[in-house]
Every structure is written in C-alpha cells, then in structure tokens.
Image (cartoon, rainbow, N blue to C red):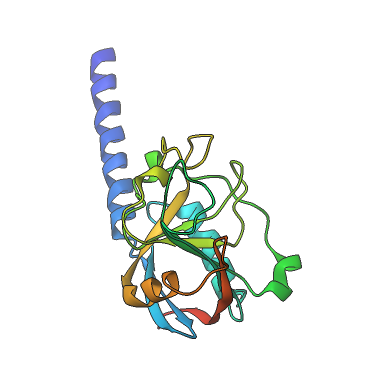
Length: 201
C-alpha cells in the first residue's frame, strides 16, 4: 500500500511539474519598443524565465519612467576603465528628473537559474552589489559570457540579471555604442536621448 502511495504521489508530482512547465512555456514575451533620437529597436521581455526582473522593468515602462531618459554609457574595447575583464555594452536609464521616484531594488535573478544568457542583444539590469538593481539597464553588444553567473566582470561572481533580448533594430543599439564618449571614460558625450519606451500594441 505504501509503495502504491509513493507511485501515485510521484505521478501527481510529475504531472504538476509538467503543467507548470507548459504554463511557463505558454507565456509569451512582452514586446517593448525603445525609441531613441538615433532610431528605435524592439525588445522581447522574458517574463517566463526571469519573472522578477521582467516585472520590474515593465513597471518602469508602464509608468513612463524611461520617457525622457537617456543612454548615458557606452563600454567599448577602446574606452573602458577596467582592463582586466573587457565587455561591450550600452547602458540606459530613466528620466533623471524621476530618479527620486525609483522603485525599490529587486532580488538578483542569476543566469544559472533563469537560463537567459548575456548573448548579443541581451537586455539586462545594471547593479552594484547583489539585490541592488533598480531602473538602469544595458544591452549587450556581442556575446558577453563574463556577465553571466560565474563570470568575472563582477567581483562577487553572481553575474547580472538578463531578462530578454533585442529582436529588431540592433543596428540602432550598435550606432549608440559607436557614439562619442569622453576622452578618458565610458560616459556618452552627449548622452543619447530616449524618447519613449512602450509596450508594442
């Protein structure tokens, strides 16, 4: 009888796990359009695999926080301050006037858990320490495995929280990446204006 009970329990557990995976798989990414003064690109936000990070980003999108924001940083091989672990990304953020209204920081969703790697076009949250990401995000220019869990770009080895990818208009992200920066640094001079960031109808 006990053996039968364990068999039935196992079957039920497997069935529930299958339903959960099916439900996750059925959740479609949310398409977001990022319009800048240099053109626009579209991003798929993966709420199935990175639910906490995706929900956080979409709260800023739906609240209009990124409208009037800016891409303020371009990290290239020729300009980055750090020389030990090289990466290539562009980083953007909300309207500076709304910084005081930023939402609370979110828990870090590691790539080892989400399975969303920092490949070319990936969108991810900027952070300092663990569980410190708020509104700033970055786009990978080329594959950036050192930003994944276990990578060396962040000293804690926890990586960053990728939550989707650019699906069209990557040439605009590359144009931002090539834009002028300060003589000795990564700050875009001038910053590239973000006009709007909205869900695609």
